[in-house]
Length: 302
Image 1 (tube, rainbow, N blue to C red):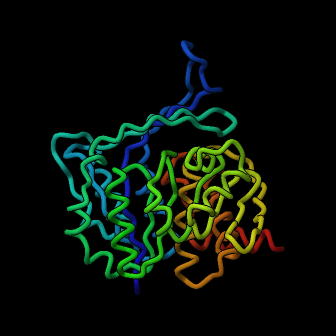
Image 2 (image 1 turned 30 degrees about the vertical axis):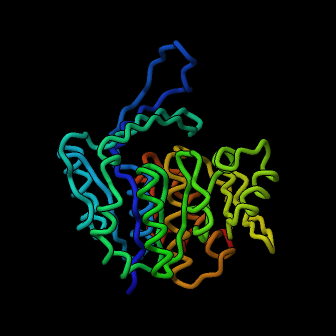
């Protein structure tokens, strides 16, 4: 069975629960502290693996305790981690996360060893692309690495899903070769350099983006191409922690698409996975398995 290939970041998340987010210069008391495995790349890899797809990941961790933990977790999740290496001279990536009582979060990422992934590393791992049914990317590793990953996928006719987070400017060469671009509203405006969502959509389509899947949080998702547009409503849940909702969506979407679901159906499946994830604390601990998503959808349909 062909795999989902994830090229991206691995972080350890240091999470503080607080009644609200502090203002600039303000100190407040938090109530809880947790250490969770994270990183957008690893989150999306775990999300896809738990939904039931074979997953390979290419990435870097530091030669430290956090790095060893992340390698062990990847193995426990059934992810092919032969292309995840520990490097000296940089710590494992970290994310400092504050979660307020209403489930909203703020995140500061320290990239660390994620910056050590190179285009040469991808060339050395080219055999992983030969086994892939889809390539999943984010923006927590150097942009030249993402560009090389897109080039390799394009050469081998592998569809590319790009989640442009954290939001930053993306070379047009990458955008034109991505099959599905999956931004949230903030990322959509920033990467397009436009003031509103409609202008942003038109600008990205004009640059050659084939398909947009804009995640809208509690408002669902918007599917946009040059030919059609469709809104996928969100499922109503009470959020506890939204940290990995987008990653859950991306991983589940990739699995559903590679298993033959049409995009609207795949997006609804991914929305269900994301809805479940926000009802649980943490990044990877919140990600559902396939049977949970199927049960949730069955209950919603009923």
